[in-house]
Image 1 (tube, protein in one colour):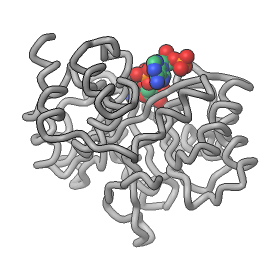
Image 2 (cartoon, helix red, strand yellow):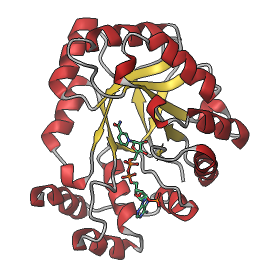
Image 3 (cartoon, protein in one colour):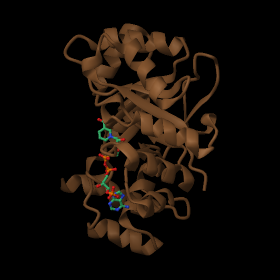
Length: 264
Ligand SMILES: NC(=O)c1ccc[n+]([C@@H]2O[C@H](COP(=O)([O-])OP(=O)(O)OC[C@H]3O[C@@H](n4cnc5c(N)ncnc54)[C@H](OP(=O)(O)O)[C@@H]3O)[C@@H](O)[C@H]2O)c1
């Protein structure tokens, strides 16, 4: 099935940027397992990959994309600048592009806020490198809303995305609304690590739809229009995690999953 995508601000060359709501996370997979996992994900239908300089697997991700036969413009690739590379933005992005074997990444994120006071200078380089066409969209990760507002007003360019730890137990309608009010897409990470997949509220809904609890969690993100990037090294789970198009959660089921946050 095709996964819905969210529009991000257009790239510097005026082309549209569309971010698929479901992507494949690659943290803690390296070497040949990373290559195999990404090939498996692309074969299963994922068209959105999440990596980072810090993950040490950009080379394998790039090789897997190149070998997959999937046209480059059909895969949305995110990578991230480590905060201790503040001041080395250009060299770091050049190295990411070389390893990934691409002319531009679709999304480049500041992985964590750099030490105090350096965010604005790093963001200025992000804006400049986006202007040069080396990143189609730029954003941040692990930022709070106040820091995003500050960045936006200092540079006049708002991060397109904030990638944050997220999942049903962290559901916060106010936080999501605050991002939307600023025009920032919320991307959630660690959907399973933040969730008890054995929780009866999830297994009950899963049973009603003939799926597993993991898929309920992923479907819940997509219906909230929160981007989600599950990681797996198992070929079977890579495929099942992508298979969330055949059912929809009812408003009551969405509310029951939202309510998991009140128990934590
Ligand atoms: N920006 C940041 O600071 C940041 C931080 C953390 C993560 N991330 C990104 O977000 C991605 C996802 O987060 P994550 O890797 O921390 O955690 P995650 O995707 O929540 O969880 C991965 C764990 O869940 C297991 N799993 C996968 N599918 C499953 C299923 N269907 N049923 C049960 N267990 C399942 C995996 O085991 P198997 O591999 O054995 O299937 C693995 O142990 C990362 O890979 C990374 O790309 C970003």
